[in-house]
Length: 207
Ligand SMILES: Cc1cc2nc3c(=O)[nH]c(=O)nc-3n(C[C@H](O)[C@H](O)[C@H](O)COP(=O)(O)O)c2cc1C
Image (tube, rainbow, N blue to C red):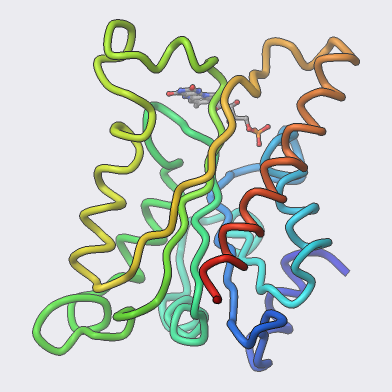
Protein backbone atom coordinates (compact mmCIF):
# COMPACT_ATOMS: atom_id res chain seq x y z
CA UNK A 1 0.00 0.00 0.00
CA UNK A 2 1.37 3.43 -0.88
CA UNK A 3 2.26 6.16 1.60
CA UNK A 4 -0.71 8.19 0.43
CA UNK A 5 -3.20 5.33 0.71
CA UNK A 6 -2.03 4.61 4.20
CA UNK A 7 -2.12 8.25 5.17
CA UNK A 8 -5.75 8.38 4.02
CA UNK A 9 -6.53 5.25 6.00
CA UNK A 10 -4.97 6.75 9.06
CA UNK A 11 -7.41 9.64 9.06
CA UNK A 12 -9.79 7.98 11.46
CA UNK A 13 -7.25 6.17 13.57
CA UNK A 14 -5.50 7.29 16.69
CA UNK A 15 -1.80 7.12 16.04
CA UNK A 16 0.57 7.24 18.94
CA UNK A 17 4.27 6.83 19.67
CA UNK A 18 5.49 4.48 22.39
CA UNK A 19 5.01 7.24 24.91
CA UNK A 20 1.53 8.10 23.77
CA UNK A 21 2.19 11.00 21.40
CA UNK A 22 0.64 11.35 17.96
CA UNK A 23 3.21 12.26 15.34
CA UNK A 24 2.34 13.75 11.96
CA UNK A 25 5.00 14.15 9.26
CA UNK A 26 3.98 16.52 6.47
CA UNK A 27 6.10 16.11 3.34
CA UNK A 28 6.41 19.13 1.05
CA UNK A 29 8.49 17.55 -1.73
CA UNK A 30 6.61 17.79 -5.02
CA UNK A 31 7.90 14.49 -6.47
CA UNK A 32 8.76 12.19 -3.61
CA UNK A 33 8.48 8.93 -5.56
CA UNK A 34 10.14 10.36 -8.66
CA UNK A 35 13.33 12.35 -8.38
CA UNK A 36 13.73 12.50 -4.60
CA UNK A 37 16.55 10.62 -2.93
CA UNK A 38 17.08 12.44 0.34
CA UNK A 39 13.49 13.17 1.38
CA UNK A 40 12.28 9.78 0.16
CA UNK A 41 14.88 7.93 2.24
CA UNK A 42 14.33 10.16 5.26
CA UNK A 43 10.61 9.38 5.18
CA UNK A 44 11.13 5.66 4.62
CA UNK A 45 13.56 5.41 7.51
CA UNK A 46 11.30 7.58 9.66
CA UNK A 47 8.43 5.18 8.95
CA UNK A 48 10.63 2.22 9.90
CA UNK A 49 11.58 3.84 13.17
CA UNK A 50 8.19 5.37 13.95
CA UNK A 51 5.67 3.03 12.31
CA UNK A 52 2.75 4.64 14.10
CA UNK A 53 3.39 8.11 12.75
CA UNK A 54 0.99 9.54 10.20
CA UNK A 55 2.74 10.41 6.93
CA UNK A 56 1.12 13.17 4.92
CA UNK A 57 2.54 13.16 1.39
CA UNK A 58 1.21 16.40 -0.02
CA UNK A 59 2.40 15.67 -3.58
CA UNK A 60 0.40 12.44 -3.75
CA UNK A 61 -2.71 13.92 -2.22
CA UNK A 62 -2.70 17.27 -4.00
CA UNK A 63 -1.24 17.04 -7.50
CA UNK A 64 -3.58 19.92 -8.37
CA UNK A 65 -2.51 22.02 -5.35
CA UNK A 66 -6.14 21.99 -4.13
CA UNK A 67 -5.70 21.32 -0.45
CA UNK A 68 -8.48 19.55 1.45
CA UNK A 69 -8.44 22.06 4.30
CA UNK A 70 -10.81 20.18 6.61
CA UNK A 71 -8.86 16.91 6.24
CA UNK A 72 -5.54 18.65 6.85
CA UNK A 73 -6.89 20.49 9.87
CA UNK A 74 -8.13 17.17 11.30
CA UNK A 75 -4.64 15.68 10.92
CA UNK A 76 -3.17 18.69 12.73
CA UNK A 77 -5.76 18.48 15.49
CA UNK A 78 -4.88 14.83 16.14
CA UNK A 79 -1.13 15.47 16.24
CA UNK A 80 0.97 16.21 19.30
CA UNK A 81 4.11 16.59 17.18
CA UNK A 82 4.11 18.04 13.67
CA UNK A 83 7.16 17.49 11.44
CA UNK A 84 7.62 19.73 8.41
CA UNK A 85 9.73 17.62 6.04
CA UNK A 86 11.00 19.37 2.91
CA UNK A 87 13.87 20.03 0.52
CA UNK A 88 15.10 23.63 0.56
CA UNK A 89 14.02 25.22 -2.70
CA UNK A 90 15.00 28.79 -3.34
CA UNK A 91 15.96 29.30 0.30
CA UNK A 92 12.50 28.30 1.44
CA UNK A 93 9.91 25.53 1.52
CA UNK A 94 8.54 24.20 -1.79
CA UNK A 95 5.45 26.06 -2.97
CA UNK A 96 3.21 23.05 -2.26
CA UNK A 97 4.08 23.17 1.41
CA UNK A 98 3.51 26.92 1.49
CA UNK A 99 0.11 26.42 -0.15
CA UNK A 100 -0.73 23.75 2.42
CA UNK A 101 0.14 26.16 5.23
CA UNK A 102 -1.55 29.18 3.64
CA UNK A 103 -4.80 27.23 3.20
CA UNK A 104 -4.80 25.13 6.37
CA UNK A 105 -3.57 27.60 8.96
CA UNK A 106 -6.73 29.68 8.89
CA UNK A 107 -7.61 32.63 11.06
CA UNK A 108 -9.89 31.22 13.75
CA UNK A 109 -8.17 27.81 13.53
CA UNK A 110 -4.45 28.36 14.11
CA UNK A 111 -4.38 32.02 15.08
CA UNK A 112 -6.61 34.95 15.92
CA UNK A 113 -8.66 35.47 19.09
CA UNK A 114 -10.46 32.12 18.79
CA UNK A 115 -7.81 30.23 16.79
CA UNK A 116 -6.21 27.98 19.39
CA UNK A 117 -6.13 24.60 17.60
CA UNK A 118 -2.33 24.33 17.52
CA UNK A 119 -1.50 25.70 20.96
CA UNK A 120 0.88 23.42 22.87
CA UNK A 121 1.72 21.16 19.91
CA UNK A 122 5.35 20.56 19.06
CA UNK A 123 6.74 21.62 15.70
CA UNK A 124 9.94 20.29 14.10
CA UNK A 125 11.46 21.52 10.85
CA UNK A 126 13.33 18.79 8.98
CA UNK A 127 14.98 19.79 5.70
CA UNK A 128 17.70 19.08 3.16
CA UNK A 129 19.84 21.30 0.96
CA UNK A 130 21.64 20.77 -2.32
CA UNK A 131 24.39 23.21 -1.39
CA UNK A 132 27.11 22.22 1.06
CA UNK A 133 27.50 23.78 4.51
CA UNK A 134 30.17 26.18 3.14
CA UNK A 135 27.45 27.89 1.09
CA UNK A 136 25.56 28.88 4.20
CA UNK A 137 27.98 31.32 5.73
CA UNK A 138 27.34 35.02 6.26
CA UNK A 139 29.88 35.76 3.52
CA UNK A 140 28.30 33.52 0.85
CA UNK A 141 24.56 33.58 1.56
CA UNK A 142 24.24 36.57 3.88
CA UNK A 143 22.92 34.38 6.69
CA UNK A 144 23.22 30.90 8.13
CA UNK A 145 20.90 28.13 6.93
CA UNK A 146 19.03 28.16 10.24
CA UNK A 147 18.50 31.93 10.03
CA UNK A 148 17.22 31.68 6.46
CA UNK A 149 14.89 28.71 6.90
CA UNK A 150 13.86 29.04 10.50
CA UNK A 151 12.86 32.73 10.63
CA UNK A 152 9.34 32.22 9.20
CA UNK A 153 8.95 28.95 11.10
CA UNK A 154 9.87 30.62 14.40
CA UNK A 155 7.28 33.32 13.65
CA UNK A 156 4.67 30.71 12.77
CA UNK A 157 5.33 28.74 15.95
CA UNK A 158 5.01 31.88 18.08
CA UNK A 159 1.85 33.09 16.38
CA UNK A 160 0.15 29.70 16.70
CA UNK A 161 1.41 28.84 20.20
CA UNK A 162 3.41 25.79 19.11
CA UNK A 163 6.64 24.76 20.80
CA UNK A 164 9.53 24.56 18.40
CA UNK A 165 11.89 21.60 18.72
CA UNK A 166 15.47 21.68 17.46
CA UNK A 167 15.54 21.63 13.63
CA UNK A 168 17.12 18.70 11.78
CA UNK A 169 18.88 19.32 8.50
CA UNK A 170 21.31 17.75 6.07
CA UNK A 171 23.47 19.72 3.67
CA UNK A 172 24.81 18.79 0.27
CA UNK A 173 22.32 16.25 -1.08
CA UNK A 174 22.69 17.63 -4.57
CA UNK A 175 21.18 16.45 -7.85
CA UNK A 176 24.59 17.03 -9.45
CA UNK A 177 26.24 13.98 -7.89
CA UNK A 178 23.50 11.37 -8.27
CA UNK A 179 25.00 9.62 -11.27
CA UNK A 180 27.94 8.65 -9.11
CA UNK A 181 27.00 5.39 -7.28
CA UNK A 182 29.27 6.12 -4.33
CA UNK A 183 27.86 9.62 -3.87
CA UNK A 184 24.35 8.20 -4.17
CA UNK A 185 25.01 5.54 -1.51
CA UNK A 186 26.46 8.21 0.77
CA UNK A 187 23.34 10.35 0.24
CA UNK A 188 21.06 7.45 1.17
CA UNK A 189 23.09 6.75 4.29
CA UNK A 190 23.03 10.41 5.32
CA UNK A 191 19.28 10.51 4.77
CA UNK A 192 18.82 7.53 7.09
CA UNK A 193 21.05 9.17 9.67
CA UNK A 194 18.94 12.32 9.33
CA UNK A 195 15.79 10.29 10.10
CA UNK A 196 17.45 8.79 13.17
CA UNK A 197 18.32 12.30 14.46
CA UNK A 198 14.74 13.41 13.84
CA UNK A 199 13.27 10.47 15.76
CA UNK A 200 15.69 11.05 18.62
CA UNK A 201 14.61 14.69 18.95
CA UNK A 202 10.93 13.70 18.96
CA UNK A 203 11.45 10.95 21.52
CA UNK A 204 13.54 13.26 23.72
CA UNK A 205 10.69 15.78 23.71
CA UNK A 206 8.28 13.16 25.08
CA UNK A 207 10.12 12.84 28.37
C1 LIG B 1 13.68 24.23 -7.70
C2 LIG B 1 14.84 23.90 -6.82
C3 LIG B 1 15.35 24.88 -6.01
C4 LIG B 1 16.41 24.59 -5.15
N1 LIG B 1 16.89 25.59 -4.32
C5 LIG B 1 17.90 25.31 -3.46
C6 LIG B 1 18.37 26.31 -2.54
O1 LIG B 1 17.88 27.43 -2.48
N2 LIG B 1 19.39 25.96 -1.71
C7 LIG B 1 19.96 24.71 -1.72
O2 LIG B 1 20.88 24.48 -0.94
N3 LIG B 1 19.51 23.75 -2.56
C8 LIG B 1 18.50 24.02 -3.42
N4 LIG B 1 18.02 23.03 -4.23
C9 LIG B 1 18.53 21.65 -4.09
C10 LIG B 1 17.59 20.82 -3.16
O3 LIG B 1 17.53 21.36 -1.87
C11 LIG B 1 18.07 19.38 -3.09
O4 LIG B 1 18.08 18.86 -4.37
C12 LIG B 1 17.15 18.56 -2.18
O5 LIG B 1 17.33 18.96 -0.84
C13 LIG B 1 17.42 17.09 -2.31
O6 LIG B 1 16.35 16.38 -1.77
P1 LIG B 1 15.61 15.22 -2.57
O7 LIG B 1 16.65 14.20 -2.94
O8 LIG B 1 14.60 14.69 -1.63
O9 LIG B 1 15.00 15.85 -3.80
C14 LIG B 1 16.98 23.30 -5.12
C15 LIG B 1 16.46 22.30 -5.96
C16 LIG B 1 15.39 22.59 -6.80
C17 LIG B 1 14.84 21.51 -7.68
